[in-house]
Image (cartoon, rainbow, N blue to C red; front, side, top):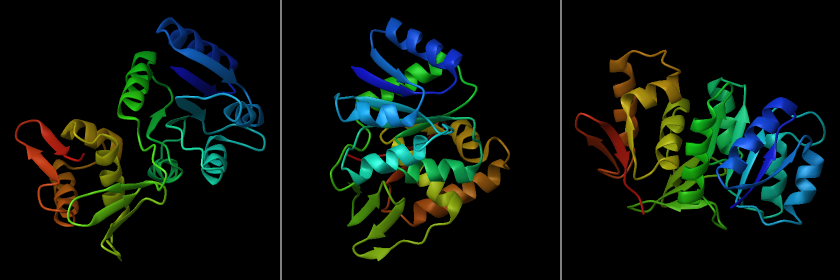
Length: 220
């Protein structure tokens, strides 16, 4: 598997590159977005690791957007120190399949890389994930529709749904949801209410309550 890494922190870039090479990945690393952009059109990459805060013409977000404009749909993990919910939404709206916040353990990065490669993320031409009962989820615009009608979701409901879709067919524990959606700053009862509100807007049993463990979105 060949990975592209865009990271302008030389020490972190070298650490990630050395670690992933030790895990038998081929890694091409770059410190600026322009060089990374050119490389993507000359080499077939299986996964992109893009730092968001890169100076120059292309940061992680704008690079991913430019690739989408060229119909280059490559699974992407954003790497960033940004921690707000708005940044998370922006990342997924730009077409990433995962999002890891600095500082992070390299083992965690490895797990996310393996998951992204295994699931193949959303490597589709139309950027739609087909759900039961005429529901469709646009993984680029972050929108849910039923037949041709838009399904109204709150900002938090959108974040929850996107997290489930990124981890479809896998159990998400409440602890994982608390951390990823609310950064552990939420009352458990309130979190359950918001999750259940989302479930009521989706096809019945699309998100299942796995007793004692958490929830799982079942999707082909």
